[in-house]
Length: 135
Image (tube, rainbow, N blue to C red):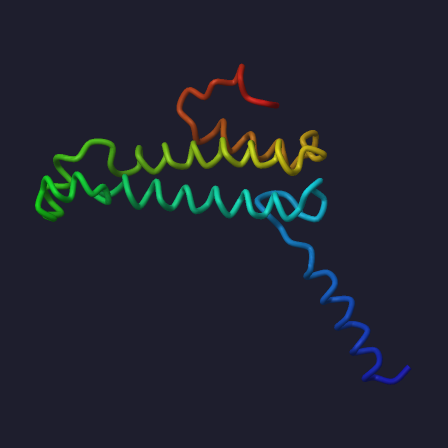
């Protein structure tokens, strides 16, 4: 086999390996519905970005309006800003990722990947309701 043939075979093997898409801790192709799982995670990430941008670190429109856009006023007078707010958004994102797994990757709920997803939820949420969590 020539050098160029071996290079093409190696390239083909590498490109097939790169088709496996990691979504969170999961390899999406292992899920019952990979496309729905990927879409769900994208929606969760969009929801998180909106939560953080619209509510945390002075991003809320109501806070901005009440302080006339003054950053020091927003830092001092707007409740729920900063790390606590970001953690609340992260808690919601973690819970929604569990929902994604339950909806589209249910065949993996006994996997280490699912366990890691649940651990993220337990680690980031303050007083999570463990009795109602699906794990």
